[in-house]
Length: 419
Image 1 (tube, rainbow, N blue to C red):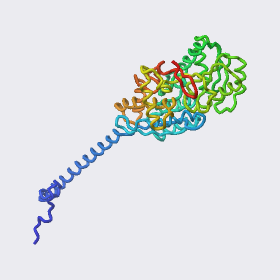
Image 2 (cartoon, rainbow, N blue to C red):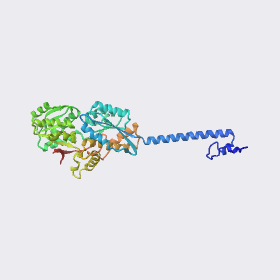
Image 3 (cartoon, one colour):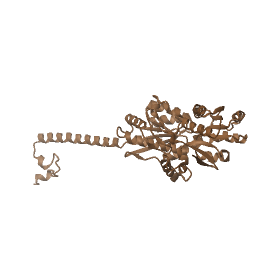
């Protein structure tokens, strides 16, 4: 007859059916089994909680980007898109995902992209868009969904005044008033008394006219002509003839990208010999390429990054500007850098600094994180970017001062720093 112990488990594992428990009465063994099952369930639940907490702790930061990689503003949007690829892949130990969409320089597309990024991709922050009209159109999306937005467009109206809607919106390009003052100051020093104005027939052109008008009088300048044209126009002969009839000492062209070449070229063809000024909206190599000799001798205000290597070594932005140039040109080739890509770079720096602070208060993917990110952006101090030193506040969602602009002259197809 076989030994009955051979039928008894003896694995020593503590199982209720181990040899030590086998001899116990059936009722006792049943109660022990129930207790162990409960303990096992609690252990499993605890493990699930730990896994869930671990997952939350390492939730990805989702960054939604809409920019103008095609269309009239493509010469601005392409370097911005190239710059997104240089942004950090992790922040505070969290993985960062960049969802990049092209709005084709169209306001309707910009709004649709913003809504898609928020609703479908659940982004924690919006970067974009490239142009003023697109960025203004996106304000409602940022406010309605309470998603922080960092624009790469110039108009002060994007962030000013910081009302209930704009409290969610920040931007990196210099305000028009800052650049208008730089132009007016330079004009006065050059002996200019009268100015002809021609700009885009949209928010960019109108914003520039309003801001330049504010400072012109203080510098003894009189605006004697005020003309507009559409970004996609192929002729501005009528507008130029009116400007020529006013005989201004200088002409200010308030446009951006390669479409800004058209008025200047037409003026040159019609024999205008006064001084030419453009805005910082043309500070890229595509403008030089398309404009050629027609834009030689033009003056414009720009961010320090455009002529960083020519700046004095003591200039406060020289080091941070050169850092961006080195990174961008290593990826895209020598001489490929533009001020527009630098606006995107600065947006990334602000986002990175703010996200690091927000992670201490909430987890990505939550309303609490978006609020913490907005609050952190508003409190950033001394962030050294490619264009300037950013110091945000509840009433200033740009945070740049006069260190963020220099005067530049186009000379022999290149940018020359004007001390």
